[in-house]
Image (cartoon, rainbow, N blue to C red):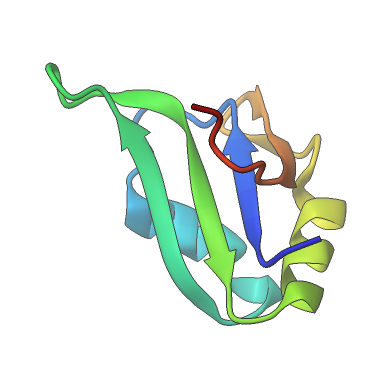
Length: 84
């Protein structure tokens, strides 16, 4: 796997700090990013969390995939490399 996970279907008001807080119970987070529209600055409803180790990322995927947060069911899985 890897230590970076994709988190989709986020509540649109979520910021990076909210994302970090939601996943911090699974281990040390080195980076949390919510992807925003470059023109409006609004969240696109997904982001990425990078953990210090792979085990934490695995635990987070297992625990959080399908979990409801503010009425939205999260889609959580291993982040795939960006395709050109």
